[in-house]
Image (cartoon, rainbow, N blue to C red; front, side, top):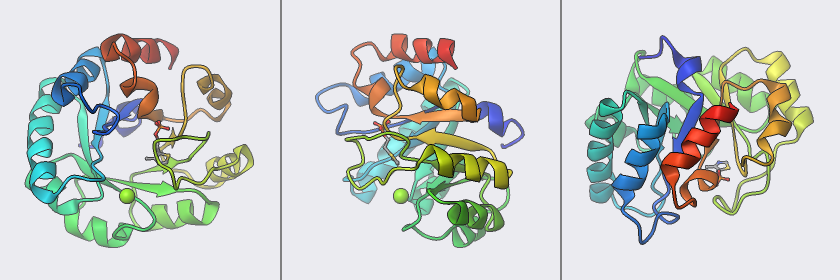
Length: 208
Ligand code: TZP
Ligand code: MG
């Protein structure tokens, strides 16, 4: 499940039902998968458990079809029920150690980290990768605090763990992040707000 984790992190798409409102959610996500998304995270901030699970089960099938890894945000119960490849937890969610205990050793555990201390702790507690951000300002997560390039460098130099960058990243600013050589980029709006999601993912794959 995590033999090729660094490769799998390369084109990391996170779903957002609000941004996709009024569109066919599954078709939009499938277009991204078809174009080469390597890892998909289902992130549902407003769905109740039933709706979340229904989406998770459908996306589990789609990610299998396109050979992409499937990660569930926050909800370990749903990750286990749909047999996702892993879960992603933030600093105010169930802590990484407890999450690891519940999902076992085989599944992928992702943890959000904004400081060197959080990154070290995530690794010690069993994270397989960390998500560092927000790198730029974003309207997708209103409470997201920013991470400076200095902090990012400090984390990279001191914590040996696969990492993705997240937050406000688009095709115009991604060039500024290449110097940090991340394993991948985790993107929401720069991809999902586009009319042609398939074409947009293809552009990202060309760039990264
Ligand atoms: N965590 C930190 S920033 C962020 C999350 C979930 C939102 C990223 O969304 P976008 O639209 O790519 O800025
Ligand atoms: Mg969270």
